[in-house]
Amino acid sequence: MIAQADLGMLDGLERALLNGRLHMAYQPKVSLRDGSLRRVEALVRWDDPELGAVPPSRFVPLAERHGLIDDLTQWGLRTTLRQWRKWQDEGIDTDLAFNISAVSLDQLDFPDLVERMCRALAVPTERLVLELTEGATQPLIKLMDTLTRFRIKGIGLAIDDFGVGYSTLMQLRQLPFTELKIDRFFVQDSPQEQDSALIVRSIIDLAHGLGLSVTAEGVETPAQLRLLRALECDIAQGYLVSQPLAPDTLGAWYESWKKQ
Ligand code: C2E
Ligand code: CA
Ligand code: CA
Ligand code: CA
Image 1: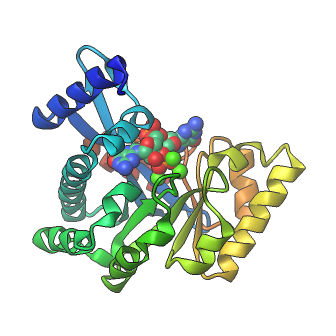
Image 2 (image 1 turned 30 degrees about the vertical axis):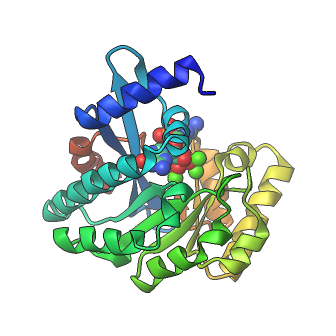
């Protein structure tokens, strides 16, 4: 049984996809070493005339369960890669991070599709990072073949939300990740809480030992930033650096950030 509210939302999402009512927001991530722009993460947004702003944490899982996720992913990827092309032409030098639902990874030809899309726009696959979250229904280990194909094409793979949910140490050893993202749950408490700081330090050391670069999510305060820098975390993302931005405002953010 699918709940009435979900049914309405699913209907709305299908219409939003058709009518171009979805858009992408882009959040900058910066180097903790020199402050330079390292990546921009694409985040989907849906402003519905009836439902208001629906958060992706609400509608992405719904799309996953009811067969809309492949359309959503392809629309988002196409939109994002085009935007990335524009930024490159404007001289904004950045890698691109895109969230992929594990549900979209059970097709072995998906890496070929992503590569073709990159080629068509002349954007470099080596600077694309796909962010993956371990889910209950689709363990990433089952997707090893697809993940390996991405790596062969030079596409980076980040394990998202590390430390919460279903992510495990086993995956770090078995899967071909290039980056680890520490969930903001640990980042947020780290300056005040010894235990959180210890966990953050351990995750960073572990990831570096395995050859992965480390991004901290949800950095909101200078104290968090200082601690992460002291612990040699590589990249920071969060409201302290920037909120997710509309595509045409990244240029202004970039110019003012460079001057800081
Ligand atoms: P995520 O991949 O962990 O994305 C980071 C989330 O944290 C984003 O929420 C972002 O707006 C928010 N955030 C960034 N900085 C801060 C901060 O300093 N403090 C706090 N409290 N939050 C911060 P958002 O955009 O609502 O996305 C939620 C989740 O939905 C994402 O979590 C991701 O799992 C999923 N998602 C978003 N866009 C897409 C997409 O295009 N495709 C797929 N498959 N999933 C997506
Ligand atoms: Ca993410
Ligand atoms: Ca995350
Ligand atoms: Ca998440």
